[in-house]
Amino acid sequence: MPDESSKKEARRRIDRVAKAMRQFGLSDPGDIADALSEPPFPSLAILEKRVKALDLRLPPNVSSRFVAEALLAAVNDVSPATLKWREKFGKAPDLASIKTGAKQAGRYHRTIFATLQGIFDGTLSNGKIEQEINKGIHRVDVMFDNFADNGFFADVRDRLKLISNHVPTECKNYTDDLSSPEYDQLSGRLNKHIGQVGMLVFRRLTDSEKALEHMKAKWAKDELIIMLDDAEILAMHKARYEGRPGDVDALLWKKVRHLRLNSAK
Image (cartoon, rainbow, N blue to C red; front, side):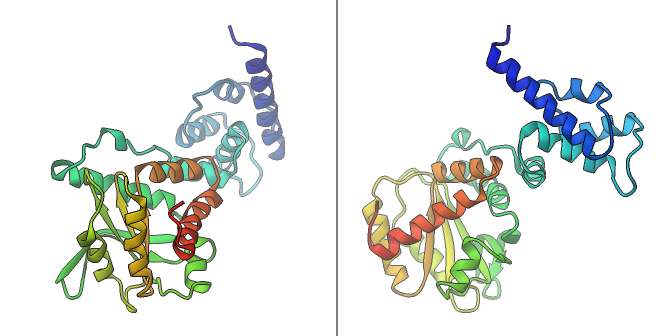
């Protein structure tokens, strides 16, 4: 039996659905309320089909998909933009099931690529795996183009004055902490043509002080290396899922702050 708080939330949910329907001059036909009364809720595609099947008299220029988006936004109490993001990128990466080491390095690489596409959707674009550079002499695990108009990657370019037209990213499925060759590899991809900002994604970190020393050495050359472990990747994905993209920027700026203040905490 549902408790009283669950019943109240269900009533609030139905009220939000009814309010969303009234925005389009529609009354709740019952079928929609049944579909959205309790989670798990139908996907956008399924709900769009249900709205179409009802043959509602929608206002001009209002599609069944638009109505479905509004209804799901209401029932989830999130913005339509967040719902669209969830539809495309909402599945959290199963990093825990990927074992460290060379055998599953490819799977880790592909998983991180897909996850970063979602986390930085709207700021970093045209992501590509195994991007050739320097006439094919080198390859970058993942390369993004920076088209950010606002947020962290825009501020890095505009406030810190770091060239970041492209953001090379290396993925390391290692058991142990990274060492000098991994930092140097990414540093070797950075220049005034490609960019001065790169990301180094790895599984976990035990010696934060040593990692900071590596990043400081690159910072002294006007190179910003952003290190991201499993926990931070999952936290950023969760923030986007919950409609809090500002928390992603906050996490990244915290790393820059630590670097500039020479602090690992």
